[in-house]
Amino acid sequence: MDTVHYRDDGAIQKWDGECHFGWVLEGRAIQDVWIRPKRPAPSTMYGTTLRIFDPEIDGWHIIWNDPLNRDHSRQIGRAEGNDIVQLGTDLRGLKTRWRFTEITANSFHWIGEERPSESDPWQITYEHLVRQTKP
Image (tube, rainbow, N blue to C red; front, side, top):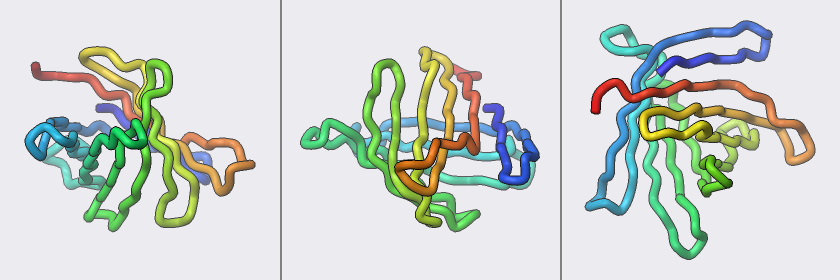
């Protein structure tokens, strides 16, 4: 994956990285691991997401945890057209929207956004361009 971080001071940081996805809990959930930068470089992010489908809400309960940065959040994810959109609130109290767009069999574009309140516009903070390198 290629990552872009749009910092509050206007600077842009770029990294490479890797993602690993798989079904877990006897096919009841999807777990992924996000590593940045690509190993063997020392990690600046090393986290995991657990996505569990809930038919009562027709959506996914999402739990993100990055113990390296002591970051965690909960979201609800649903399909919106061809995209997957996850909504929640982070540890700082900011509203978060994580979108999986341009989804193909071998790639996707992940866009992370935040805003202080419902009336504020979304601000892009991270983008991940992810492509499969091994079948």
